[in-house]
Image (cartoon, rainbow, N blue to C red):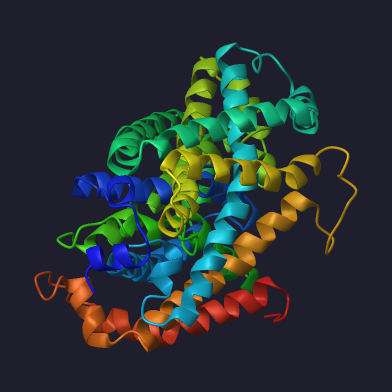
Length: 461
């Protein structure tokens, strides 16, 4: 069944949806944008800080090279082969597997609902940076200011709505006219700003100790939780299991090289994480602060760093603009997952589908938003709503969807059809195909089961 027949079968509006990415560069920038987000700029540095530095980085790099690239090939193959939304893609060979696509769509919508809140934070802090309001404050004042802002749910909601509106505007323009154009500008700009910040950070007096801590592995710091954290970070950093990569690949033409695109996407996402660490952690050491500050590293510790360096307002503004770009490129892919599905299954226009999803996301965002306010004392499994959402996405849904994708592609699909899809019917040379296929079929499922059981506390290792 070709893409046209499948599109007609599932009710796609050809004029509205199935314009493809116009260039290999555009697709790679969009896929890299989906991968590059808060997981790289915000979460990777603080996860490194919490897990001992260089040893965590090394384990992460190995995991990204082996598991990250392998699963990106899986998701690109599933998406392009279907030419449809994640739901239809997972169920193409057997309808009973559609539940995997549904699960990924639900998970990424939940993710976007609290991700959108942090996206709003980036806008607020960018404004505070360009107005100089973060400069001249001591550490206690910066921390108090962050707590005051995040607990003012009305203000946070306003900035979250602004972030959502910007995301919706890009998605409204479609694949080639909106997402591709935006990402081909945002991603190169993001890399340039990150390199500027990294250069400034590593040249600060006293930064050498931070560079050593960050890049030199200390295996005495490694525990079983280090491996679990690194593998979980690969999923978050590369947008695996979210349906975003499957959805983007559904707009990819049959001539593109899937293994190459997967490799470049993984390298881009990983490079941004490594550069973000270089932009943040040496500066933290240079000013005698702790790298293990957790989620507050970007919004509390870094403003303290910027406030103590020359031209602090400028570098603070650049960082939070970078932070915003990274959040936006990922949020675009998150919203597109559900919008594509709605367009397939209904007669809605893209505008109506985007509006419906924005309303749903605003409703879903209410609990994590209020968890910083009057609902802060409400705990489920010992977690507030914000942490519960993050736990569900990072530790349950994404690894399970990744596991399901690996099993479907290696145990449900006909291997000849799979190889034809990945190699463009033999036109693309993929010398590592046999290794990749065996790794996906036998090794990755075992690793992901261990990750899931350990992350959920069922297995203690």
